[in-house]
Image (cartoon, rainbow, N blue to C red; front, top):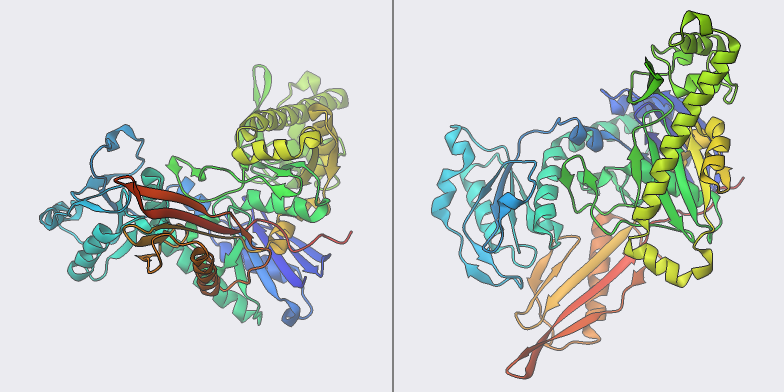
Length: 555
């Protein structure tokens, strides 16, 4: 392990930790300025008051930049051009974006069935707008196996509109046409915003005389260097960070439910015998289904700063916040005020917390007895909402293939979960949550900055999956979209091991990461038979570096 800084940009606060060989030396918490995340990150770094910035070996940031841009609909318009081929009704799918259909078809093995039609390319949407395209995403149904039509159209657009930015769907390398189309479109839409952020952050950190590389945490719990990250991969990095923080504080064989209670949301995750549960589907963000690989995590809209307003039944816990808690200078009653009044937390002004509780009570009930009763009811409501989400997600998690495999391999551990609680409200809610869930609850180390700890201790994740069709002599790589001609034999065996090793080395060098503890899947060989004779094989091979942390925290 080395000297690392972890920074988590949350909706309410941005947290930072400085970790030296597994020991947390310093922590910081600053308000998040959503309009300027770079300055927020610099505030956090400065608050750490590092004596010698040259000792920092790495900075890892978990950021809400891309997530917020998508959910708040702050993306530029992208022209989505599709080669769907026959046998598919695009209208049957819930497209959250406009698209144009084009002629041209590949079959499922990447063989051209029908060529593209360049005459259609003069009727694109921007022609009717009498303008030029700025962002264009081009996706073919089976382009991940043969990108010919995408390349042809991209070449035409580059010549006709030199300033146009183009994204190609085959570069996402997977078979789900709908998710691949939306992922290509979304990633292109956020690329400009992300690149501006990356450049500003790199320049600002350099101005502090910090030369350490900057990495960004991904939805799957891994980290990649700032300039190498596909922007869309940074969604849901906050929930992933809370799972990683739990790994740094638990035994390698522990199975835990992670509950991270923030100011705006509560994040939930699951660890099975020391391994975070990965979702078998791509991440969903707003109306967009994506191919982004993510941990099986969820965020629910309840946190320490959720607004509590009066109602005929007494009060309603809303799904939004209006700034900090009343006891911290805010304008509305929140669960944090209830925790402060009952002295379950030690920050904030207790008199202001009492004033906030009184604001929704009738004058005749403004007494300590009713204040305590109301505060307990608010806390119980928060705990019930979190517990209901945990119970619901348990049922969902049990349907994940990785969970089913874990149950088979660990039959005696299936019910030995504990709950690790972190976040600003963790201290006050841990006991009540444990009682409601009826399982052991543990408060994390430095729970108020746990996500920053998870970011600091994250290691890279890595996946390399190839498919070879030796009969038509083509291969493609899922993660990079690389395609090419297969130069090997029609029925290879040992050959594919070296081929996979070469792909791994090339991909790791491009990403600028070191590969350790790489896991290789057994190769799958499917014979291709024609006229009762084997004429080739379809082969799949894969190597993975699973999500995890570089070590445990020294307590």
